[in-house]
Length: 59
Image (tube, rainbow, N blue to C red; front, side):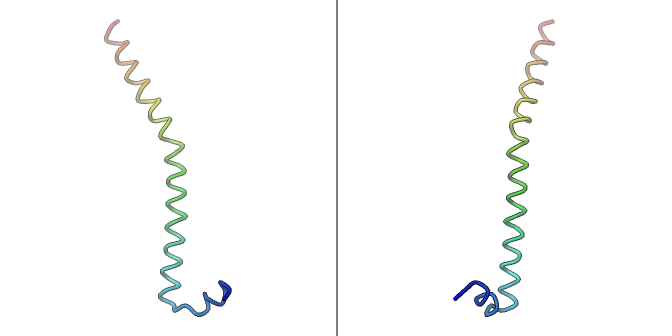
């Protein structure tokens, strides 16, 4: 049974669940990709801010 035949045999409710799951999966993938890119920058920014505060105290 090919996927198209299986899709045609599914009820409308099941098709809606599959579509929502697919949309959620794509959204989650996009969000995690952005988060993966921003976390290192946030760590560097926090470290730089901490170093700046420490150097400002000693001056």
